[in-house]
Image (cartoon, rainbow, N blue to C red):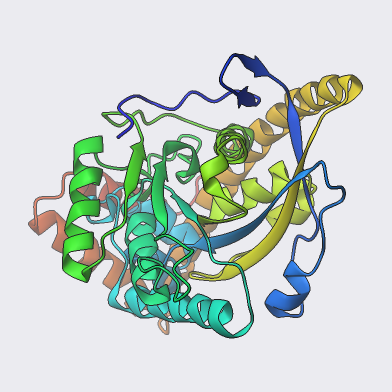
Length: 368
């Protein structure tokens, strides 16, 4: 088991005699696969010297905080409910388990009937919803068992800190926090026991939580770090699965070279399985400098966008709850939101007091 936090570098190439660093870029063949697996996987590598892998990108199963977004709208859930203890590193819901099972069986059938490649490694975010989805998919897709020909060993699970959800920009959302390394290990062991799954795994996560503000480029960089590790690891084979979140899915696409404006409008459904053929190549000297300049500018752009998005989300939440309160047809929504917060206050959740106070302040008429 890995016992220290991952160190993210541009790219580390290891052999028996030396370690050297070489910046790399990852070139995708397609961003939005159309025509099913066959169309997505039929493109060959750009040259025989390039390193090419099939990557299945999967978003975790549905969770209670996802359901909050659907029930209250994302702005109101984000502003009033995201700090509640009930949302700390949430597990997938019963519907999420069913969706995960369907996704696992879908992958199993594609491997069996369409000759889709079978993943050798699953790289998962350390958050509970991704770990749960990974192990449920391993079970349903039969990845814990060798293929009938005996040439494919069971899949290996690697839990990587770099794939976790965006920690936000001054958000402090409980759903983006995770447990300690020991708690994650206990979760993996318990899930394997409960589901009758036995696969090797590694934890590449810190001993304790290190929660801090991020902009999107920070997520891009840690996702790239995982890809760099993956492409440098011969044991990862030619097909892997990444178990991701909404934002880390988008960061994957940004790392692959797709414009941020295109990526931001690309929403991934829970348990969607998206196949990509991705080739890694070395960067020319001029490209290294160009990427550094691009990332410097993009960090500042992401910083501005994060601030603007946070403010816009708060304004929309306030508009929503005021509209509920002023319309007799939707007044019940405001009453239900208050009741929900009061219920969790009765359960001893310390965050509900400030959430209720904020709600009541937001409902006051604006002062001009």
